[in-house]
Length: 453
Image 1: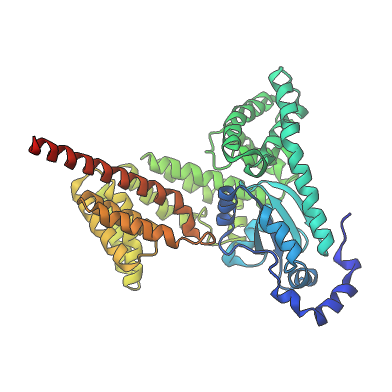
Image 2: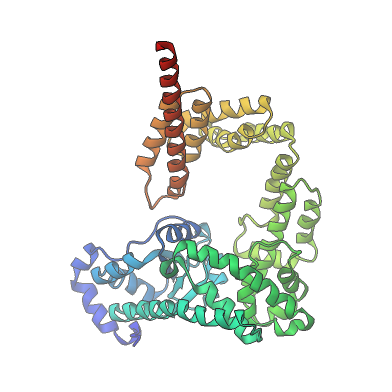
């Protein structure tokens, strides 16, 4: 049974005055990084995500932070099963308003339980004591553990030809809840590949009567299965064309964010393909998408999907997509001129190096190599600098030196830091260099044998 703080505050008041040992308890190990990085870490560690959505003025939030989250039993339970994250719903710097609005958070604290892909599997609203929080988490996990069994039942019915709307809707929903935490990362990926055609068929089947799809449940499915799809996708077009109707049944921010994010994806896809019509879709942000754009801008003005941030990125991607390396280099030079110091210049060169090194044009490859060298010497802690500079060393035959900096970088990676996402890339690079060294050694042995004979 859930136990709310409002009924147990006297206990906590006593505890606050006398239990200094709570302050030193291990407790929940909250991840320090961005929300997206927390999701990524959960995916890598095959865990779920626990999010404490709070505000600085929320009394029950403070009580939980001081007396519940630091508890050793709570810490042991949560740290083994979740990547935990604290989200100040009012902090613009960490996208608090955007994220809390996306999950339709209306009260504090709200305790979210998510899959690594960000889909919600459960929540608690209001404060909990230690027993109540553990019970809430156990309830969520128990329900989650039943999902694979229910998924198998629904799959059998679907494969048997049942296309009744409620059944397919539940099938898609349960499939979206199944995560690597209890299904296996590889199996989860295969499931997502299997379910995409099911979703596409589901949408197509009911387009003759779109009113059957304009509801909260189907919008959640669309958000999950059509995220970052272009406007040409039937599910995205359905939402855009029936925006006002959806606005009556789903949270406004979530609806606006979906529409603007899909437009962003369309713009970037077109730009990367070298299609100049990407500009037409940017223009929509001032016309038919103006209201949705204004809603996002009011809550999160620096978001990358908004017009001011989107235009320069799209232009850069278009230059790359059309192999206009002179134009791209001119863009880089303009940024370098505006750079505040050498450190910022090195960061700009580090980002540009990867594109230039893979341009296929020797002139720009050489510039990319120079940028990679400069960036690495300025900051050896950035994995992308290590990867780029090592490529320069490998091309010049300095395999030992490349291997050394790969291994040094790998040994210093911190699982709680965003750079940990480069772990697999570094390990693959190390294996590749070692294979090259082995091949070189074998060739030298063969050459020596031929000389001896």
